[in-house]
Image (cartoon, rainbow, N blue to C red; front, side, top):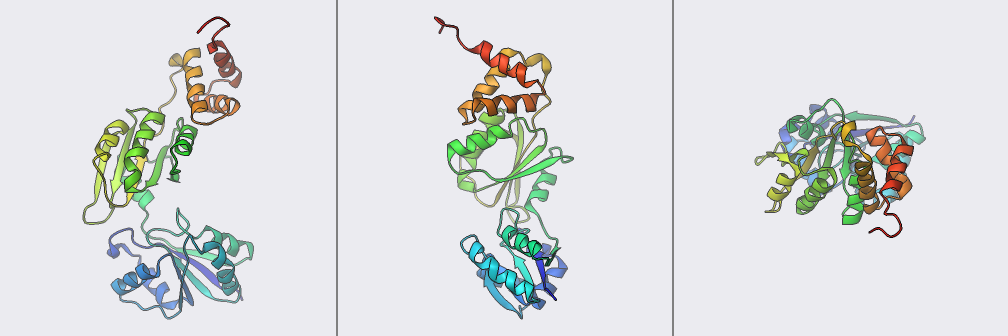
Length: 284
């Protein structure tokens, strides 16, 4: 018989939010794979439990190498508990490789649901929650970040991001440039912790606020793009949107397709608008 892989959500701040099943799984698993074994030790002490199984580290640096070892243990019948520093494993954290390996080998995978920074921030943001998409962390390099933001500039669903505090001001500034200075957003800081704060407002205003320095774990929620106004989408505006995407790194073909998709305008119409915007010979 094969074992079971258990993905366990851990508190994102307040240890009292730990799901009741977490303590039982920690004490009963054959192997506990933790992103940070020191944080795991603090968590188990706070919960008053002692793992009886083997504790191993499982983080970004050794995830690829350790996955086959854990998959073999699962195939041999072990119950493996996977925990990260906060929240649900595999959501911008280690775990996806092990889940994929377990599924490929027909091993059962289950979860102990727990706190989620994504859903908590979304609920607190005051922005639409009926449709949303999680974008994780943006690239660190400015050019790659602009390209990624250009890809979702026309996304109608609410967007959720994770960000490091020292990059927050630059990220919000880039978002204001890509989405518009007036696009509504919320910066959720230190969720469930003593100094929890939710700052809401236009992106440009939030970028200015973040410029003074922000600390803590950050989740950013951004309103989706408003429905395009057909009356405002003349040839000049269509050409401007294509040019902005090209400047962010997209090819002209990709930019035209993206503008057509996000505005509902036919690709041929967008192409004609780009051609019409080109200066004629002798013009500047």
